Image 1 (cartoon, rainbow, N blue to C red):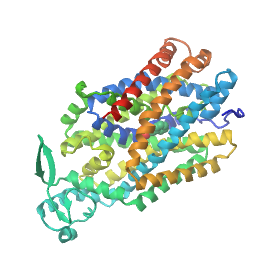
Image 2 (image 1 turned 45 degrees about the vertical axis):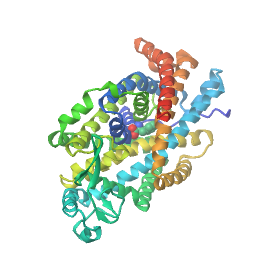
Image 3 (image 1 turned 45 degrees about the horizontal axis):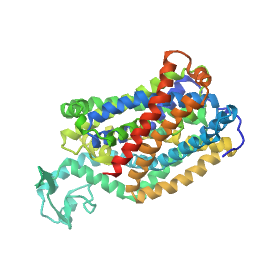
Image 4 (image 1 turned 90 degrees about the horizontal axis):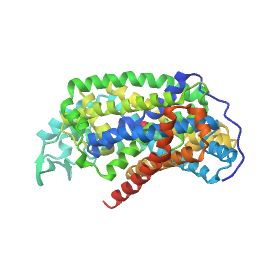
Length: 498
Ligand code: PHE
């Protein structure tokens, strides 16, 4: 693992605003809009959210600061920075392995992240075509025709492909939906939520279409990364992120007016700790790391482009604050709709794609289209940060230029993505491994490295001295390694022990 210590980075963020947009852009993404709501839903809502907020504060934020600090100190890609620090300070070379773990986690995350982005992409033209507004009429038509053959009513419905594997079609005949109520099976009518769910299944089932959207999304990532940090990443984030924030607020206002805000607030804000298991805690910690983009050395890489006059503690708080705000807002946009339409809050990865279209179906078509466009923007600024870890490493260590590096890595990632398109269940596994296991593990290692291995003067130099440094050091040294190790072991055990 030893190798030459490369020269420092010459490209830097052009302005503080540009850095903040790029850093917030990396943090705010599908983690907030897609992963947070469904993970919260699967883990009982409010108690999960309380643990999540504690995890952001105690684990995520200090690791974020440590990553920026070490990145700026090293001025190189994550692996090269670790190589430099271990060489300069005469520390065990094995720590370079932490950079490898981060790079593998980032690329693994990236490989399925682009597929989910492909789903988001696919929903943009669907919104424009007005498909969502037909959902309620279609539910009515289906209910009126229960017992009929699908083929007989196919001409009456415009969008739902009933040959898709939807629960309300059995052997080509439309049926009521079986549901368990108090341990007894009852049959219920088809709802607008079922139609929306069917639409989602049909979308992800159209493999060629998803492949094309994923490939285009990936191609745009490669294009921006090839243009460099200031001219590519920063420029893209400066345009995309402000647009994203404005639209998000609009969606929340709409949800407040039309959704079941009471039920959502109850679900999100009244913690029921009896539902908490080790599994819940691990999910919340993993989500905190995923959402803040920490634990995978992405922020090492972004820190390397930081100029010396930027205050790391202040900016880290700003990034973490903005990210948490967007996650909570996404919860408040999605759960009122979940409860108003009687959908299952533990609906899993499809939650975003099933709930929001129902709401958008009642609004002018451009609203849904704009929302999914902005979700795509947020996903985009996160995805580029994940791929940048690899591109930056190839540039530093292998002297492969950004253009070649981005294209080469992009091709490899497309192969992985194709596997997920055909085997959707692999996404859950890759997500668990990278998001829930590798990121917290990386975070614990960064805690030990920054807290115990790196000389204190380096952190003092980057973070400044004072009470805040003592608190951060205490968390990095004791709280993070001990708690995360315990949480990881018990969480993984609880998951596999059932
Ligand atoms: N934080 C990003 C999101 O919320 C995902 C991500 C994770 C990006 C880790 C970089 C590193 O979508």
